[in-house]
Length: 453
Image 1 (cartoon, rainbow, N blue to C red):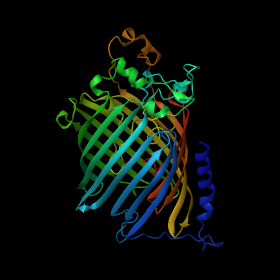
Image 2 (cartoon, one colour):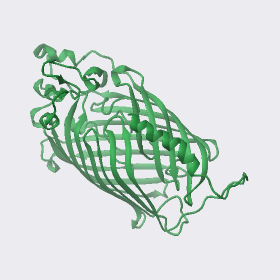
Image 3 (cartoon, one colour):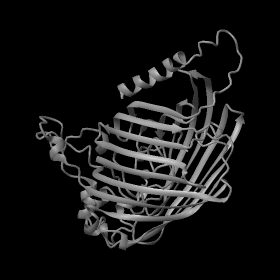
Image 4 (tube, helix red, strand yellow):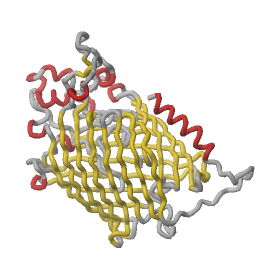
């Protein structure tokens, strides 16, 4: 944490100094923003922090082609490549391509990713019905002082995800009203955390071998044929209504989308097939033109029919070029609460954010600004995952971790952020969130790319 806070300190205090325009002198004359043409390069070493995955290191490159500049800051092509690892065992190997020039009149988005998690968050199902003990998650509690075993990975399992996607959007009434269609492959390989590997060469502070994931299998909450995951192909279609004045940080307009997903069993290596409905609405308001704005987002995502395997429930879907993320909680949904804390067959979440620019200037001959933000986020389960009948009678120990009578209410996080923006498109965001209830966590620091929505 100290390393992350040091990085944040340097970014906050040194960037404004180095970004001063040397030609500014003492004049207050407003600078005209330079229109970019051709290729623009944004490549950086990845040195970041996310409370859910730890310190992140690696490299990323984002290439933009602005064509003749007539549509700036909109681009003709965006190619994004990332190779990164984290200290909590996550890995990203990813390439995406976003363009509206490949097929005339159609915006195309392609992704190929191999995402690895040695210790993915797993807190159970149905929100507050799943009890969360912060001590088991974060503290080195000795289960047996003589063996010095710690249970801090109790709420974790491993996952390797191969994701390949192709999404398309085309005009119905200009760019404002569009159709969307796509196909995506999700290959999930699920298992318990490899404790033997993590304990290798350790003399003290060894990890125990029990986990909530394995308990859920023993109790019959996770079915035996789902325990190691599976591969599913999603077919999608929907509509988008988009009147934003720009994509990176809109000051006016709405962005509303509806998606229908079908994951047929005949396109899976399992017997499970299901349908899903996704609705997300975002709206943006100008408070001070070009300086201060308000943005909010509300979303519902729920099962329509069929049976959804437990490992597919947490995924949260957005219209391209926004990427699919893990479930409600953490840096992309409810900041401050734990990643995947809110998991069910259906869920809703919302965000409210006030954004304000505090500096606009040139940095290395590039357009540059800094903005601050304050936010309130919330999410809750709306469709519960069915628990086995007589669960607590058959397995009394489950009562330590499950309260079927618990009332589900919104899980709330709140906090603030700072954003460093190059040429309006390349955005480094630092958010710090607080959980309103200890059942959801404590705090979270997130250093990522782009505004949340």
